[in-house]
Length: 151
Image (cartoon, rainbow, N blue to C red; front, side, top):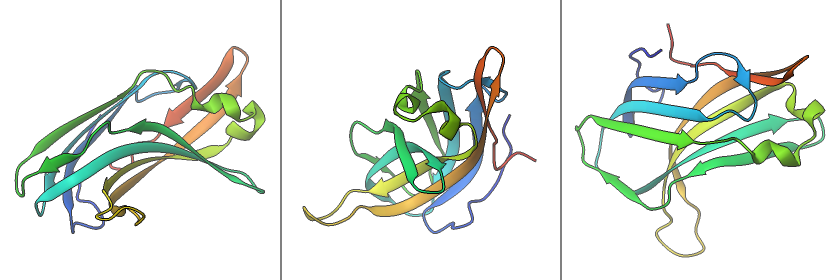
């Protein structure tokens, strides 16, 4: 499912749609496909995409990287872009006990500009957070990621 929207910070991107597949409750480790249509408000050079899953527990925050662009990308200003990110299997949860994963989490889709000089930080240009609910049922642990731009 998808719907039109504008990002809360339209400085760099105008988001037209976001689709998360599957868009229902599935086993925790199931594949995830993210499709997004956006329009750069300005020319974007040397950017990378990442997808992270954040598990917050009282004593520690776990940040799991699910996807990282293999190389830098560039987008011209004012051109509608279709982005597809595929995560074939979410195996990053294996290092966290199931009882800690069974909670609310955040899936974050981020775009950063590479550091201009070695040793400096990347510049975050865009971040979209999707709430995830993880539950245990008799036949396994399930996740459901909510699309923040669905009507």
